[in-house]
Length: 243
Image (cartoon, rainbow, N blue to C red; front, side, top):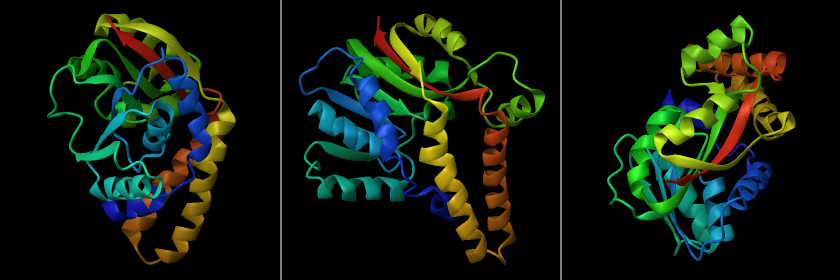
């Protein structure tokens, strides 16, 4: 099932969303060759963009070895392997020294551990007055319809509005430098549209595999719900500095 999930999601076009990685990075003060920890990096589209933007040293951590292997291959192709280092591991137990990094970066992965828990536990890894940048799912409006609320509650209890996340940032030991939401078309063009096309193709490949078809149905339901309720939820970048 893990292999099926990887085949559904691997190599979906993400490069267009690099514009938002760049926007978030440029909201940070200028740093000279910073040390960056990319948590939950996947195949590393943001990782490689950060390497180009920062000219710094990037350590990326993920629990999916095939994704790390793909990232290592791409870093070598781009001539970035000297500054991009893969590390297999869990964000729940990061075995790295305190205050090692200038920046922690997490695009679409902090939900695994939870917004507040991630900010609190990762804080030790950043130098004094270092930075954390998180891309997180958010409600765009309060009191969403019950259908979409119950769906996301079953997946991630921590989904909140932008303002609710902002209010939690200071209690976790950070100052907010800025935040912004992604436009609606970013999610459709860069994720849900290509994902729906992938699902159509995989249905033919797995037409006799009931488990795989069930997984494809689950992914299709998320797409259908996004189409129906896209004005209610999306994602936002939060740019923070350690107090």
